[in-house]
Image 1 (tube, one colour):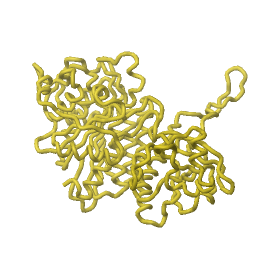
Image 2 (cartoon, helix red, strand yellow; image 1 turned 135 degrees about the vertical axis):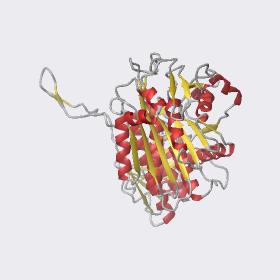
Image 3 (tube, rainbow, N blue to C red; image 1 turned 180 degrees about the horizontal axis):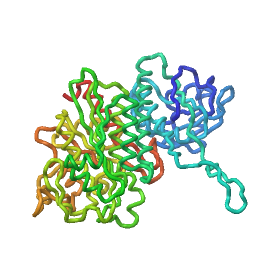
Image 4 (cartoon, rainbow, N blue to C red; image 1 turned 90 degrees about the vertical axis):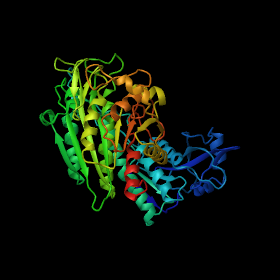
Amino acid sequence: MTALTLTTSGAATLRADVIVVGVAKGAAGPVVAAGAEAVDKGFDGKLATVLETLGATGAEGEVTKVPAPAGFKSPVVLAVGLGPLPEKDEAFGAESLRRAAGVAARSLTGAKKAGIALPVETAEDVAAIGEGLLLGSYAFTVYRGGEKKKTAKSGEKSAAKDSASKPPVGEVVLLGAKPRDKAHKAAADRAITLTEEINRARDLINTPSNDLTPEAFAAIATAAGKEHGIKVEVLDEKALAKGGYGGLIGVGQGSANPPRLVRLAYTARGAKQSLAFVGKGITYDSGGISLKPAGHNETMKLDMSGAAAVLASVVTAARLGLKVNVTGWLALAENMPSGSATRPGDVLRMYSGKTVEVLNTDAEGRLVLADAITRAAEENPDAIVDVATLTGAMMLALGLRTFGIMANDDAFRTALHELAGEVGEAAWPMPLPADLRKGLDSPIADLANMGERMGGGLVAGIFLREFVPENTTWAHLDIAGPAFNEGAPFGYTPKGGTGSAIRTLVALAEHTAAGDLG
C-alpha cells in the first residue's frame, strides 16, 4: 500500500518524481489553490496562466502536467482540478479535497514519490487528503502476472505479467502538514488505518468466488480477528442446522460450499454502549433455481460486499481503540442451483421461529440477513445496522453511487444520513410504507420473501423489519448501487469493489463512543 508521510518541507526542495498542486475553477479562469504558493512563485506567479494556456479550467477531475520551474528538485508539476472556487472566506470542502487527491493518486502510477501541495489548514484537511490519496492509489493485482511459463512449441519463456501495468505511487508526502502536530498526526494515522481496512474490503469484493467461498471468507475473518484482538466465532453448516438457522441453510444448501455465520466481537474496556453490524455475505449469487438471466451473473462475486464492509468496520473500530463495543455478523452463503437447492414454493423455518414461503430464490439476501439480525438482537445492542447489496430496485431508485437508508426509528435514520454526508458517502433516507407490508402475506407461511414489485427495495426493508424485535433500534443500508463500480474509475473510487458504507459505519461507531448519538 502507498505510504503517507507529513512534512513541513517546501515544494521547491523536496526530492520527488512530481509535485501535485490544486487548481480551482474561478469566474475568470483557473485559480491556483492554497498550498501551492511556492510552486506558483517558481512560475513567477503565472502558473494559472500556463495551465489555462494548456486548456486547464480547474474543473473537478481534471489533470494537467507541466515541467517544474528551474531550481525545483522535482521534474514535474501535476495540477488537479478541485472544482468551483469556494466563496470568499470559505475553504474547500473535505469531499472536494478527497476526490482531487484520489484523482491525483490515480495519475501517479509508476512514481516512487510524490509531494502533495493541496490546501492544508486543518487536521480535517489532512484526513480528507490522506484518505483520497490512499483510496485513489488502490490497485487489485493479485491475479495479474505470475511465474514465467514455457510455451508449448518452442520452450521459450513468456512473461505473464502485463508489462504495461504500473504499480501505485510508492509514497505520498503531504506538504504543509505538521508531523509534530498531534492533531495532524492523529488525522493521518486514522486515514491510514481506515483506508487499509477499506482496501481490505475491496480486495475481498474483487476476489473471484472460486477462491472466496463462505469457508474461505470465515478463515480470513478469523485471521483478522486474531491479529487485532477481536473474538471470532464461526458456525459451520452442522451448527447452523442444529441451531435452526433456516434462512442461511436454505440459501446455502444448493452449493457444494456450505454456509457460515461469523460473529466478530470487539470489546472496549469501560464501554457502556454497543452496536451490532450485520452484513450480507453471498459469496456468489447465481439466483439459485430462480436463475439470473444471461448478462447478470458476471459480477455476482460482489454480493458479499455488505459482509466485507462489516468485517472492515469492526476491525477499524478495534484498531482505533474506540470506546464502544462492536459486534459484526457475517451471513455467508453461496446461492447455487442444484438438486439440493431450495425451490420456489418451499417454506423455511427461520432462526426466529417464523416461517417464510420462498417465492423467488434470487431474493436470498434477506433470508440470510433475517437469521443474522435475529441472532444479533439476542445480545441486546443499542442499535443494529445491516448492510447489503440487496435489491436492483434500489439502483433504479437512487442510481449507482447512492445507497438507501431505511430504519424503524426516524431519528436514527436521519443520524445515519448525516454521518454519511459528513464522511463523503452519498446516501438517501428511504421510507418503509405500511401499505407495502400486506404484499408479503403468504397463504401457507408467516410471510413470503417477495411482495409487490413496485417499491421492491422498500419491500425488502419491510421484510427485514419483521425480524427486528420491538424496542430494538435498527437500520438497513442497501448498497446495491455504490458497492461495485463497473464503469471507469472516478475520484478516489476504483473500478470494481469500492468499500461502500464502511466510512459511515466507522463514523457511527466513533460518534457512539463519543456519546454524540445519545
